[in-house]
Length: 164
Image 1 (cartoon, rainbow, N blue to C red):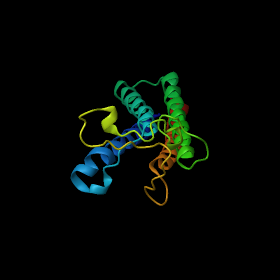
Image 2: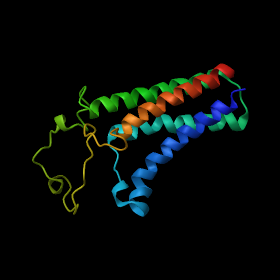
Image 3: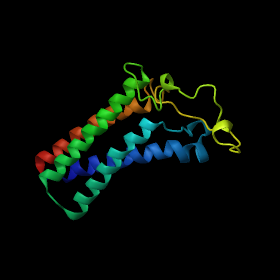
């Protein structure tokens, strides 16, 4: 039966997504002021596979389906999650260039302040760049930890698929 692995894979994906929201919103607002980390564009992109995995796993668990095809969709989604996290980790560590839209190298608007773009906007808005490395825990960034967590999700969803 695939239920234990499927349950762990579903809870793991939901926990990762919840953790991302915690560190963005709740952490900075209520607990530790240093936690209110704003995500970059690649961080937002990495949340989608976790949401898909959590939803797919919940659907499989609630309906009790033993569909190998849907389990394999979960494996593929976990692989996409790992790929996005590896890409973001490489961008942070300058192993390869990131998207021009959120990397420091593609700054086409240098010298232009926010007031010139949005008159009356008031306070300047901080732009979070994808290529800035911010250590989170033990010298690894959140993207680096997401690589490890996504690899674990691949293993859990693969084990669930083998038993489906």
